Image (cartoon, rainbow, N blue to C red; front, side, top):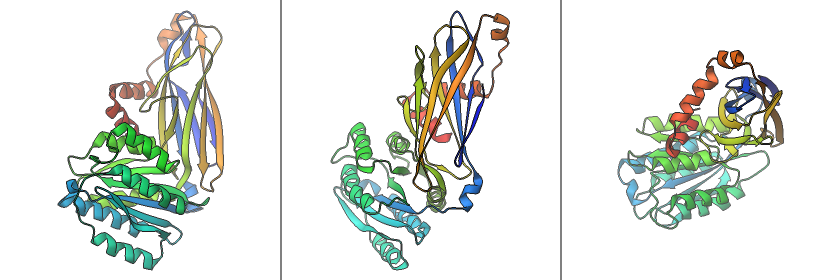
Length: 348
């Protein structure tokens, strides 16, 4: 069954892998949820950004990596508009507020560029101190009209403070709240799994920066997405009906997942795998609730119901052919490790 809903600037489309289930055995089925934002929205409202940059200057960043980190910070400053605010945190064995939260005036940007030029690598890697230092700066720049955005440029090799990856991820959720976090992995030896998890759990994107030439464009694209976002703090909650079980949401843990912010003209796809018991008539599978904040900061909600039909007709069951949902499901099942699943979600 195909359901099409218009929700403010978002279109929500759900589609099943197949429409019929066996009365005798039920079965497993994938529900594909597609989200799409109107391209026209970007012409009506440029969203101000409350940006916090976390810059790694630890000893592991010596050489070309620290220059990549400086380039990331410079790219942020160049992308800022007059309605934005920004702060910059740098860290090694400890963390310091290099630029406190301030309006992005020409004078503030010029001063920040001079400070960035003086950043040099040395010491340990205390990401937890950086997260804690960034939190009050994020709060200082927060306003109803602005989007909270955290950028992390690092190799992710935490070895001081809280260094266990699960604990660091929990700390990031605590310190940054509903802010979107995007990461820029620097150096071939960066901790890809951690930097990807850090971004995905907070609705952001993870990027690997291989050369200095790639960084300004990558950063500009990521910042531009924030200014064009029509849906922030996007959360998808899968609520199965009686006796239906959620096997998994591909690329995530749990049934209530956070999705990346959606910019004008963007599309996003989520796959949900369900186990359905035997039955007759209409198979009510799950309510899927989408909650997000629009470009004006207003909370929006929409619900869609996934349904199929039970049948005892083996001809109908056997005649069901693979469709695009089947193909997407096969791709998702190939991502059977945590890191591969995260990469699959980031790519879709």
